[in-house]
Image (tube, rainbow, N blue to C red; front, side):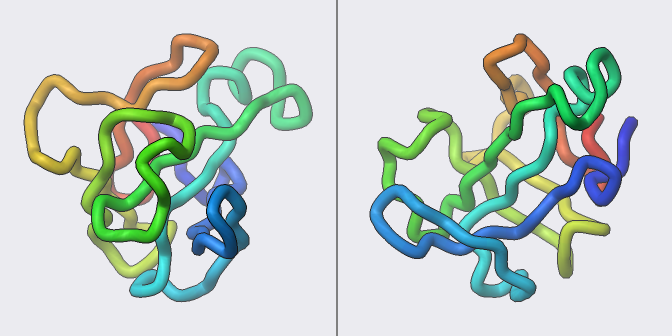
Length: 110
């Protein structure tokens, strides 16, 4: 388990069709980005890629990578963020190109 704050996590808001920027407002956030916990553990932060999770209620277009599941975002910010698949189901994990798959619960990547 790794705290999202240790993975340079940022709430983000869409600024264009396929561009986004950090935001400090949880209510305005269209998603969250953070460094891949697997790659940080294996190679360090400087050699890691980012993981993005897009809110089911946000402005991120359906074709924005990664495709597929959108997430309900619960919490007040990165430190206590929990992501739940929308629609909810037990067999869904965040996945990244390096084969990491996990969940975000109470501000930590599991």
